[in-house]
Image 1 (cartoon, one colour):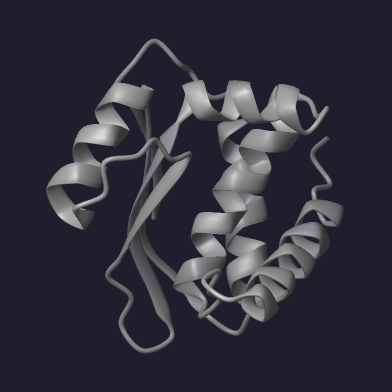
Image 2: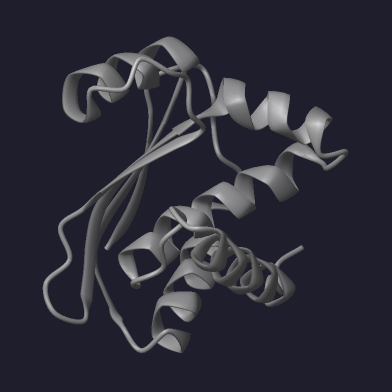
Length: 138
């Protein structure tokens, strides 16, 4: 089950469509959908999580806590809507496009994609782009 929560004033639109899209990407990657929570929050909220759980004192757009079991995706995915807004300007993108990229980025982490090396970053970006092409609800 995919659920959406907010720790700030953000409210996601097209909830059912995004849920269906995420489930399709998970299936395409050879996984099953388990319990997944997306939590939208502020920079400050995510910074505190970053410090507390990852010992990083930096802003980030997403933190994925992956609890997946075998090929079943279970996760808590925290997304800073402040970072998404800033990234959309930086990358000359719409807020929705950048939000969808971050959403699927977290999911792809749970499906085995990394982003620590240049090679893994390229593979992640390619998978993100492919997933974004499959958004039939936009």
